Image 1 (cartoon, rainbow, N blue to C red):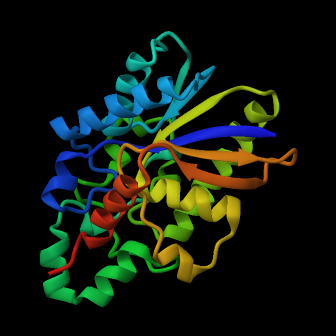
Image 2: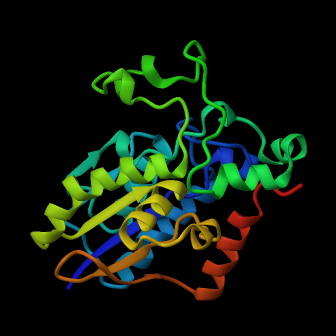
Length: 247
């Protein structure tokens, strides 16, 4: 049996402002920092250790990982960063208020943009300053691969490709892997690994700063997943995520 640990970054400035984030790059809040540190302490207390770790190229993911590894005295292990672990790209919604968007377009449309599998947000224009083509972080990425907006299904393909080609070979070698990523990145990965239906996906809310442990069989198929920590607190944090965007 194999094991891997996933974690959504701690609370970001856009989270607390209830804004669509996507590939925008806000920092962690003080609460987010404390969530990351608490996750590191919990992992250490539960006896976890890691051989290497992964993050996206967005600072909320990177800093969360750094705080966790610092708490675990593991800052020395190799860390790899990839844009393929970035949050789902929210296109022209990035930086907009979720509650104001709900008022303008309706809560049903907002829920579809946030949680459905196949619905894409309005795409960025090519000349939009939020378009990442001119960001040095993506200079090695083919321009046609840099999205202007993604459905969750698009994100499933992106993250699934990374999982299959980068993570699975390491897990098969018994490497102990930690991935610090984003709410929709992790929802996409869960969809890819478990092939849950769209109804279940709509109700899947990933809390910030809580380690999610996967047990995997010899074929790297999921056996079980569970959060570390107090179940009531985890449930409350997931409810907070579900409430985002309601008027």
